[in-house]
Amino acid sequence: MLKHVTTRGCSLCCSRELHTANRLIYPASTRPRRALATAFLVQTEGPEQHAPQQLEQQKPAKKTKPRPPAPTIVTTATDVSDATLWDNAAILVDKPQDWTSMDVCGKLRNVLRYTLPLVNGKRKKLAVGHSGTLDPLATGLLIVGVGKGTKSVDSFQAQEKEYSGVLRLGQGTPSYDSALPVSEEAPWEHLTNDQLQEAARSFLGDIMQLPPMYSAVKIKGEELYKAARRGEEVERVRRPVSVSVFDLCRQQPGSQDVAYRIVCSKGTYVRALIHDLGQKVGSAAHVRTLRRDRIGAYLVKDAWPLHDLIERARAREAA
Image (cartoon, rainbow, N blue to C red):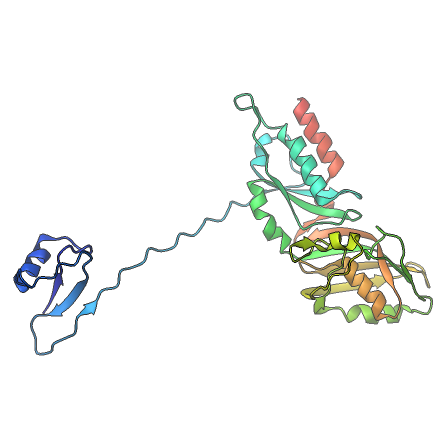
């Protein structure tokens, strides 16, 4: 028979019966008087004697944070006149050229805030953030989280993306696009469609890509583009990315400009992919135009043109 015995001052149980048993087993002169006591199982009867076994205290289970509720996906079919929409939303925006992704967020933050009702004579601040940066010269789909929807932007960023545009053969630039003047020229007239397609296929699958100097990738706490603007070249580490589609199409035979379509994973730099293609065929290449057509299941054709969304929000404010 096992009897549960506890020393004086037991913190694990405090029943009168157990403390009584403690006094019966231990004489007053030999009874332990430790401030922090431990409970034991002691064999009191039976043929076998067992060593005391310390009881393990159960650790409290860790609390897991609940997932934020899914945001309302705002498309051109959504009625944006309802101000409660901005409590938890993700807006599909068609970003115009020459706007940074942060420019879009800043503009929407200011405009949408004034569609909210006044509370004690004030309007609350509105959280706005984007998923997946688009270059200033690029256009296309940008998903903008509003309110609690900002907590879901990472889930959009991790999804597959599709791009289209035009590249130019035989010319390279420091930024790998047309944002900077041409700094490199190389022969391109000899390149056939078959050669270009074969080179494009070599980039399919999982590859290690070197990010461009003109990018927001941080090295030792500083964005690469800041060092590039100072004329510095920083040692970079190749990063794993995946390319599932890399199609090329010359609209005219022998043309220097080639249309492309790319489907790739998060973190892929299309500019770097086009630059590497030019190197692969023994020439040079840079991005002339770039448009993001899709993020996961969300299409740019369902996105709000930024200026239309701003006008609609201002009309709601005036009303």
